[in-house]
Length: 426
Image (cartoon, rainbow, N blue to C red; front, side):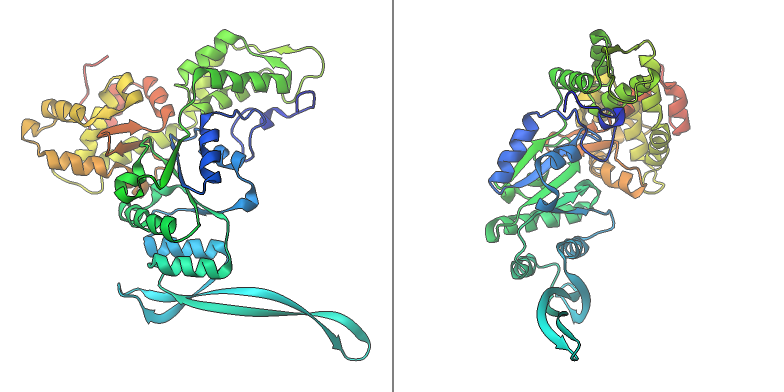
């Protein structure tokens, strides 16, 4: 595509289609190998790190169906939505399952065309008849699900986007279903979620070990991001100063979303809307800090809502555990925010600063940490900003923009607005 004319918005910035400067990395090779071997695949990573682009790059649209998960679904509703996307019409039956929910009739139609004669004047016209077939199933029974997919002759991948939105119990129930899909069918699921835990589904169901392949879409090294920008330069016939791009990569904490958006804003500020026809155009990056703040500042409303809503917890309680978890997040060192805050760090800080001090029950902290994702979903903070890794027992900030945004805020004002005591930390 080099030598052709392109719009800047087709290269840099966030868009619905694949950017023209898409960079193939290790995650692409792992995903392609896993799909070829018909594994179940989990694509995981921080918010806006290229998970959806990774899927779009390596799968054709007619290779898969996609289900966007809802925080309201249990396993019954999740399976019904899978059937709907496959192409079934779902009609609730009068019969009930063993759990007390209604069975459903899954109906699909087969189009039949037959030649008929209508009257004496029109001959050879086609008359369309539809033959329908209905199957009564229990949507909570994975064996029924496999049976009706077999009846339909379904053969595509099934993508579950935003898996992290599902209730914890629904995630666990589906992890159990996934083992049956692996052993008793040829159907493959691609599960996409915002977390940094490599073996999230295996933690939910140990029997999935060896049956699920995890693809880390979060990792971008410096060379990959430099190639992303360099390829964009070639497509638009422009040139960014190398030192400024290296600065941007470091400042963005290697977040591809921020790099792409700031490059777009830099082009826009230099009146670059499409490929330059003649000599390569040098890009003035003197306003790069202002543009980084502009890109991050677009999410200020969501970050402020996170702080306010998260501190409230699910309801008013004496210990206010989620508020004090937020206190640790806001006051910890940047390195820990980047690499994950360990449970031991929470214990140490809360023993010093929480009103209960060393009298705090460790079980209360564990329960609150385990529910940080579901609390954000309940408060409609999407995408989520923090997630707890039960395997590594640490809390991860899965939205790197929040770390950059927080550095530009008055920390004590943020703490006071959250109902927390100010700190003497710099």
